Image 1 (cartoon, rainbow, N blue to C red):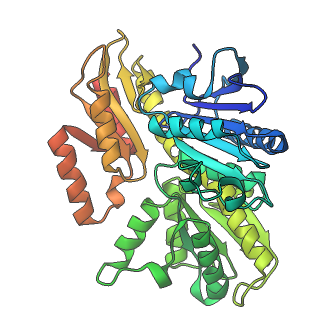
Image 2 (image 1 turned 180 degrees about the vertical axis):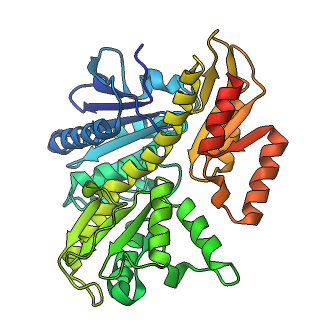
Length: 419
């Protein structure tokens, strides 16, 4: 079997259980996933097909070879082999284009939820909830499932699916800007991103009374998925904004940038991670520009978040290879460190961001898996950016479970010592 940590499957009302299946191996994806996209009727097939194509395109842009695309001759969906992986995320996207909806799709959704999966019913533009599900009596599962608000955009729908499978929590954005240059635009961007479901840190609204400013900035950025910098006339001058941008660059948080009116460009920002906007950010900008900025962040956040974890995973692989060892994936999303003789020496979970309790649990479970239980357990991430009290809580939990918390550099040294 080819290595994989992601599956995209598409089927339809006319294909039964035969799915076209794409396998992916992506650095930085710690928990494996399966996404099954079902067209529930003929009018939905074009949208479902376009969604699968968009998902494959976006995943291919962040995956590492080899990637195998093939027709799965075994059953997909609920009968896919991915259900044997205990930590795998399972998402069923059900695209609905007309009424009435067949009762078999409620049964499918019920079975999916019973097995711990997530369902996303997608109503094509023009369809209303009451039209499809009525009072909900005939569709007790589907009628209660949160529907993605995608405005008819397959690109936006793809981003919502990617969020469900790739991010371990709600997407977070740290907004960095020069207050005297861009307060008006920053407030608009803040509101737009919050409406999109992002966690957004902006100094004017998010500061916590009593906490030290630099420490809270580091914590907020360390816990974000991406830093968005607003490039304005004075962005490159010494001050907190440049400190935030350098922090973001150092810790693989982008940064992304919106460049207003051809302002100076930050050298820490890659060309493809910059959006030009020809408006004055000191006054309210147009609704179209605000939407473009929100779309830009939504398109990039997954790449940045996965890239951060991929950086740690690449370091782990290089450290193992330097001692003639290797890294092997565990079924629950952790990694095994294997020495030159083939013996598992340690279990490693990569958080990238400061660890959560789930990473401690994941690496502890991996250390008990056959063929050999191991005592050494590592969790790698930027834990140092937690506030002191939160870091002490995490350190206590790690100590109680026998887990060693490491950063990028200390992880590399630990692995070399172990192998």
